Amino acid sequence: MIAIHPIIKYGPGALLPAFLLAGCATTSVMPKPYLPAVDVPALAETDPVGTGHADAADDPAIWRNAADPAASLIVATDKKAGLYVYGLDGKVRDFVAAGALNNTDLRTVRLADGSSRILVGASDRTDKAEPRIALFSLNGSTAKLTELGTEPFLPAGHAPAEAYGFCMGAPLAAGELARAYVVLKDGTVTESRLVERGGAIVPEHLRDVKFATQSEGCVVDDATHTLYVAEEDAGIWRVALAAPALAGEAFARVGAADGLVDDIEGLGIAREADGRGWLVASSQGDNAYALFDLGTGAFTGRFRIHGGAIDGTSDTDGIEVVLGDFGPEFPEGLFVAQDGDNAPQAQNFKLLSWRAIREALGIR
Image 1 (cartoon, rainbow, N blue to C red):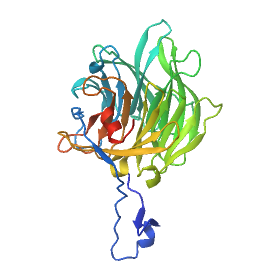
Image 2: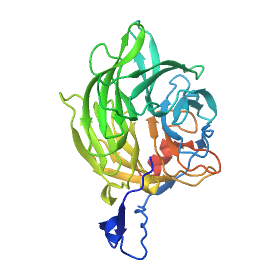
Image 3: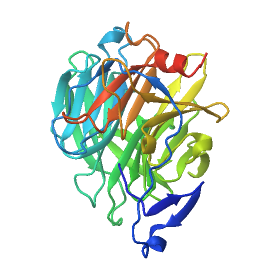
Image 4: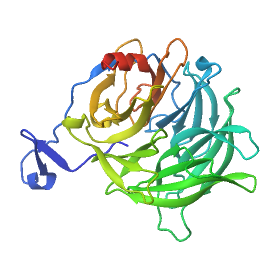
């Protein structure tokens, strides 16, 4: 989301509320900091989403085809219309007109009958008062989506709430397929387990954690059972999912020290086979992406999508990264980012090689 905040920056690091300058003859909002970053070119881009002249493309998820890595798929939202499936060539393989789906994620799950399924979930904000989780099954061979249902998950009698961010994590107890996390627009993050019931897959609400202001981006590190949440104007929080109660711990703050310029938007986890890992965050305020070492929490570096034959990105909302072989162009992993300004066409998603990002940032 792109937001305008009532803050004026003037002088070295000074901040004043805008209303204090109301008596001046002229006022202007100074640009946000534009912090240093290395350039990494996109290697491919998706077809534009169908909703033009609007902030529509939002959040991607990646399914890696282990048997044929170059045939892997990207699922991504048009938050005005529904859900797309793209090939690594960027071409549309499927589209489901499923309403206002904002963020999406996927997991391969094992059903009670022993079969496996690529389960896709999304935050459904079609009803601004009743948040829902929309579920789909993705066929990895045909790239087709099958709708499984759209379910409310909050207890009866809850206050009106709008679904916003969404991510999924590995199951934490027997009988679960996965855990689903919906970030409500007021900063509440809800946890539900996804279970089979009566021949359907449904969410069962478990617990919540609340952040002070609007949040959206989230991602689960399955290796450590840790949830990361982006509070847009403040920074990034981590939440230990194995703890009896959910509680946020500050991980990174908006500011030059952590390479973050608000809004903080999409989050992704890059895990190597040897266990090393990085959290990647969309620093939307200056069109960049910041990396953090998951072992130490240290800020690792920043990059922008720029150069090459394909245009760069700006105002990025959702991102995703998965490491591993994705074919000749993406031999070590795939990074996907929403492009908020793909003029003259509608918004779309850019595809980058993890090897190129790693080498640009000097990660060995």
